[in-house]
Amino acid sequence: MVQVAGEAVPALRIRCGDDPYSIGPGDAPILIGRELPAQIRVDDPCISRIHARVDVSGGHWVVTDAGSTNGMFVDGRRVDSVDVHDTATVRLGHAEGTAVTLTVDDTGAGTATAVDIDIDIDVGIARAGAAVADRREELGHSRRRLEADGIIDQQALADFEAGRLWPSEDVRARIEQFLKWPAGVVAAVRAGSAAPEDESTEILSDTVQTAVMVDAADIALGNVRARIESAPPQHDSGYDDYVTALLFDLRGLETMARNAGKTTHRPDAAVVLSDIRRTYNELMVRAAQAPGAPLSRRLYAARHSAELTVEETADVAGVSVDAVTDAESGRYVDPTESAALEALVRRLAAR
Image 1: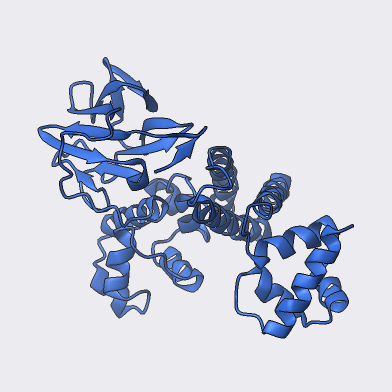
Image 2: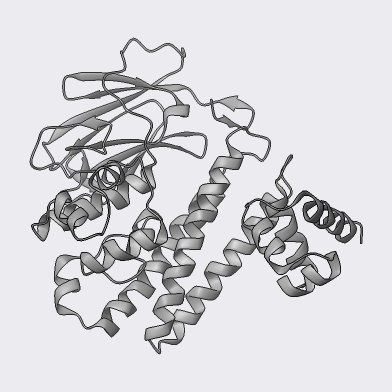
């Protein structure tokens, strides 16, 4: 269970329509929507594919609108999120839509039974996969068509759209080109940005689309920063996986912002790219202080603290530039070179 301020976050009972569910904080986040990749599904045309998200934030449960078309409502008023400290009821799709009641189970043993909840899904990948599926269907393309055109294997695409697989950067680039999206959209959506509206991708010029992507990267960066502030304690067993996901999203945003900067003359593209890199550096330095932090983070933090380039680090450690790059990326490094880099980290830390 997630530990916050030394206390366990309690389980949560959910009633969606007539169906009961019970989840623990280790199951979060849980998605509610019309179809996969949502784990709790509602057969209602007013409900988006991914409509709402149930997660733990700040030591308590929160239900959040996941960018749905028709919204989430409480007492007839559309809301973006609701904190669940005891019991809360939201309606999905419209003010009198499907009722979802969430009750904190302080006993730790809810009476509801988990029903058809598939928790082996990454919520960010699920969000990006759902956006790809929506766009693919808007354009009238089957999964078989993408496989036939050499974009991505049918099964791999199905797994991606269900939130179980994250395609490589090359495959994502092919998908974006096929769907007529600017470069970097898929990674931005995974990080929290909204997918481009259909009108923007068909009417706007490449320059304007790129400008939109700069703004999207800025918005997504804000989402990542909020998640950084909600990170579990460094001693928590889930801290490493949590940080790994954040760093992955930041690298995706950096790629998107860097590509945007190549095709637009907007000064704020440089500002956003700088902000992304600064956030990445700060997170790496913080994560390097966690117990058992891997060499990749400790080396990166030590190098940046000492203001050494990759080449300078390789020179003073007596290793190749590739060894430094591979070590900081978490890839395999020859044990002799790894030991030399460990020695350098210790020496820099002893200053």
